[in-house]
Amino acid sequence: MRNATITGWGKALPPLVLTNTDLEKIVDTSDEWITTRTGIKERRISHVEATDLATVAGRHALAAAGLEPDALDLVVNATCTPESLIPASASYVQAKLGATNAGAMDLNANCSGFIYALVTASAMVSAGVVDRVLIIGVEKLSYVMDLTDRSTCVLFGDGAGAVVVEPTDEPVGLAASELGVDGTVADILCVPEFGTVGSPGVRDPRRAGIKMEGPEVFRRAVTKMGEASLHVIAEAGWRPEEVDLLIPHQANQRIIDATARRLKLDPARVFVNIHAYGNTSAATIPVALTEALEQGRVKPRAKIVFAAFGGGLTWAAAALTWGDRVTPIATSDAQVPEPDRTVWDVLAPNLEFYGNQERSG
Image (cartoon, rainbow, N blue to C red; front, side, top):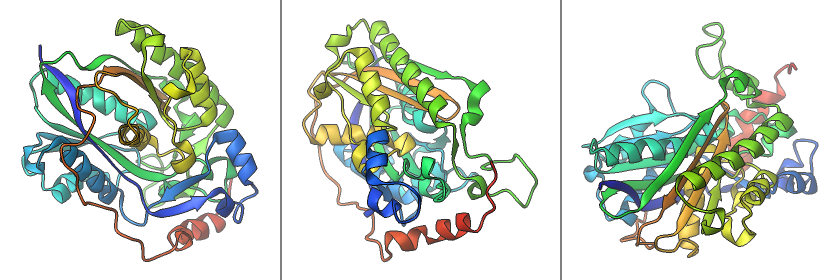
C-alpha cells in the first residue's frame, strides 16, 4: 500500500525579537499580564519578505530529506499573509528554491493551514498524483499587527516551518485526519480589508489590522481542538494514552493546556514553544515539529497528533505514525539574512500608520 510520510523538516525564524518588555513601551500592558494570559514572552519580527523565510525553511527541509529542489513535484505554501495575491506567493518560493519541475500553490486555512496542507499533500502522494511535496507554513503577521491594540499585538509573530512528504510502503504517515470550519462566525477573527470587499482604492489590510473577539475565539478553540484530537485518535484506532507527542498550534498556553487535559496527556507528551515565538499561525506546527526533532522528542514510529484552530473559523487535527528516521540526511547553511535595522525600525511604519488612524469600534 502506498502511504505518504514526512522525510524532511526545517524552520526559519527572523533574528529580530520583540519582547513583552518592549511592548510595555507602546501599549498599556505588562510582561506579567501577557505571560499569565498567553504564555508568550517574546516573538520574532521579520525584516525580509515571507517568501524569503519560506525559502530558508524549505532549503532546510529539502536537505533533511536528502533532496535537491528539482526533485520536487509540488510546493504548497500555507499562509494567510501572502506576499502577493497575484501571483500566489508559492510562485516566488518555487523560483527562489530553483524547484524547476514543481507546481506551486498557496493554501489559506489560517492557523489550521499547515494541517490542511499536510492532509492535501499526503492524499495526493498516496494516490500517486505526485511523489515529492514541499509543504511550507509561513507568516508575516507583523504586517497586519495593530500596535495600538493590546489585545492582539501581544499575540502574533513571524516565522516559517517546512516539511517534505514522500511515498512509502511502510505503515507510517497519516492515520486519520479531520478538517473543519464554521463560516457562520468567520468574522470573530479576521483582517477585514485583506481582499476585494469594499471600495477600490481604499482597501488596505492595515486599516483595520487583525480583529479578534478573544473570549469567543478562546472558547471555540478549546472545544474544537480537543474534540478534533479525540476524533482522529479514535479513527486511527489508538487510545489517548498511546499518543507519544501532541504538537498543538501555538496560539495560547491556556488553550494548549486545555487540549492536553482533554486528552489526559502529561506535559512531557506535549510540545510547547509559544513562549519564544508567539502565534505564527500556519508556521507554528512545522516549527514546533522541527524543534521537537532537534530535541530528540520524536522517536521512530512515534504516534503524533497535530491540532490547530484559526480564522475562518477553521480547525484541524491529524494523527500520524512517524517513520524510522528522526535525524536529517544532510543539513543546509541557508539562513535568514542578518538585519541592518532594529526591531523598532522595522515596526516604525506600523507605529506611524496605526498611531495616525482614527480607530472605530
